[in-house]
Image 1: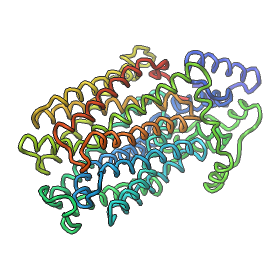
Image 2: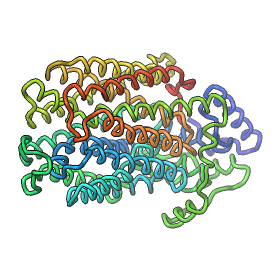
Image 3: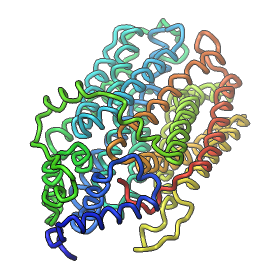
Image 4: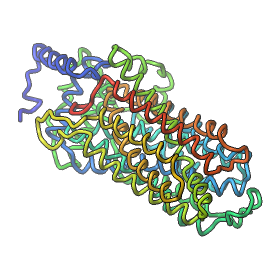
Length: 538
């Protein structure tokens, strides 16, 4: 393989490189929205990642660290859901759904703030701060003296955790070779594990350290109801351990693609060299190769974290949003994917955030409904989510196993549409359940397809946004997703009794709406004009 130093450095060859990029851009419409010099540098980085660095020790470590961030996101989303009945029993709020509203208010602000900041101050700094904030405020929520304090701390926790999905996915995607972009789909298995961990922790604590369900809300003293607090304390401790592993144990470097988009070419080379060294490899890409592409030497000396933040504050603008709509195809794709995220963000919590309450209500109607059975069923449903992520990996891009193949089994779009439609169908069938076994069965089926859906969605979304604006694009999707989640409790409040109780029949209203929204999302997925399977991400 020829080295980068052996290339001709004259203008004629630079123009040839530009022509090559133009050809690639014509074949891949999602390459629009970036400058030509960035495209050329990105081609060199992609070649370096694919042919020299590969997928080795650094990428495996980053897979775990980014995966832990995804785990933390669902850890808290489901963690709050599983403690709601006990929080309600102790504090007796007018509407327990206000806790979910508070969480999603924080998630909306966090997703928007950290996703956009990832394009301004960098992926790495956001990568570290998000888990720290989530861990600190999550721990504090476990000691909340009243419902107002609990909701406030949960909102602050949400502000931290809300940045994980857009930031972690971008950082990971930009550090892996094109041959392994399918592993971005595999990251969703961590999301499923997060739900399982929350279920198991709550099952152990809440069943053994909670008031009897027969005690009216407001008459359950704190001393007899510590189970939900133990659960929250444990989730907060786990989140802080994740932050410690990111900040102190592993040496995570900034994204080289982000660095070149900011004109920090020297730091980009250092980041690539670090990856190669950890993988036991070496690279031939040099700073001079980047200088030969740029019309002007835009390389800058390394900046401290404080300098990065100061520059971000003074240069904040909407400059990262406009490039996401630079052409008709890119604009349509961006609009549709953001809207799909919003619909799914509304549909998912309408069912999942209140699943423990549904299980308890349906169990009561069939003569059961004990705490142990409710949380046992929730753990079973969570386990079924893990193979859903593995199925998504198996069908999302069949080309990964055969070099040079162009045969796709559906690709991203078809896989996403099918898994989303199946989720809607299973939730429609859920509303026909008349016994605990049927409720558990349809819940397991929808849990499997939901995680397959999210696995494809989390991979497709960052792939269709170029690196200079990837964080912003992901932030817009994640923010609308969280806005949908914020609306979900309002729908439930409007369709259930004021005392927060949930009868078996009343449970079906929000579930029916959720199912319909999933079906609409599946239809819109088919209309997406860009297919990302088999293409290197910019």
